[in-house]
Image 1 (tube, helix red, strand yellow):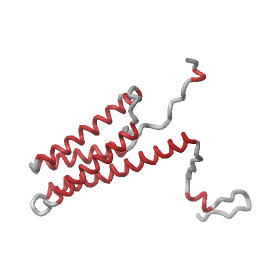
Image 2 (cartoon, one colour; image 1 turned 90 degrees about the vertical axis):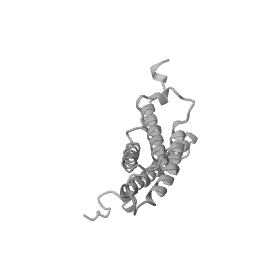
Image 3 (cartoon, one colour; image 1 turned 180 degrees about the vertical axis):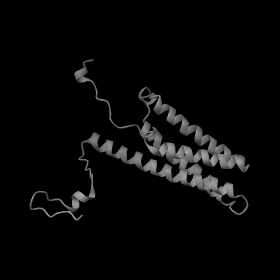
Image 4 (cartoon, one colour; image 1 turned 90 degrees about the horizontal axis):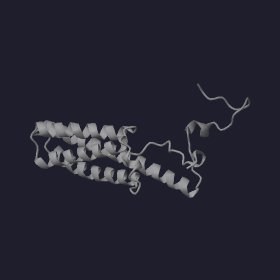
Length: 169
């Protein structure tokens, strides 16, 4: 294949790799929750669900770090990442609600539930970011004009030149 006609590499990072802080933050929060659950000798289901979520997040990190997502082209990775974020949010929210009910008896279990709830929020942010990227890519693919606002200050002061009003300091 001619290098002139080669497909340009995408400059965007995949949605689930470590360049986005959501994945690393979710992994660290889930690890902290798992440590709290193990120390307090919580119900086995709490430990099992958090361990399973850690394995899934590590699996996605390995896929993206080893760039295996380029070899497995038949999978739509952003959609798979979105599905993972939603399922993780559902499971961890159930664990968080059940664990936080033990506030008066075991405080460390409450801390683990709070960490799970924070991980749910991070997963929801990740799902929103992935959805936004997917919508932008779909609009670009369909040829719809994608409006990008770099700064809200540009809308406030649209005029430029020597006669334009000066921005307040």
